[in-house]
Image (tube, rainbow, N blue to C red):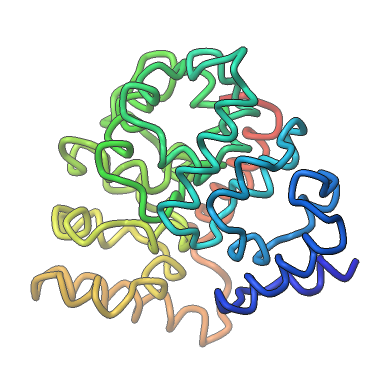
Length: 279
């Protein structure tokens, strides 16, 4: 319980390192720390020295899932973690990864090379899409490989036919497409606010006025100053108009319009379809 509390929120690296050293002292060595303890580390894991990852027991998929979350690890930490997982998963390669494996790996997938990502089965990616839709600071070549998986016939197919539900699941992987304008404007109603943090400026710049006009209010509000500054005047005007229109509806306490109701339905259906693997 103490670990859960201490690792619940982001920690300064020095504090995380101190807490990790104290935990190692309790168990004498890093490789003696039980996996159920490792699963509770949260942001304390940011303080694990890169070499220590090679000594951790990673036999439980839940342990890997706990390390697969975004913790702002250094490149050295992620590479060491990825190597440790590969060593302990020597019996399987990327082509054997299930959707459950992909969801657990999360941010660690960004440390794989593009040939590894290309070997992933499209259907496995499809089922895990929502869990790896918002990978942070992932190399563009990796995002591009995920986009190729997304456009596979066994996944979501041609981007021109993607719906808001599918965009909600795919998230930032749209950044790997050759042309984001292939996506129908109304499909962008499904782009979640959480996806905005990992959407590169060049993708926003490539979006049409109509596409930007279909962003949800929460997505618009999630745009950073840097993202907004990268847009041209017409794009800014489209976003401001969307924020003004939808904001006034909410502030006036009016009933949701059919468009806002549709966004709520999109989110609900996306979760339902993900949980039942309908997609």
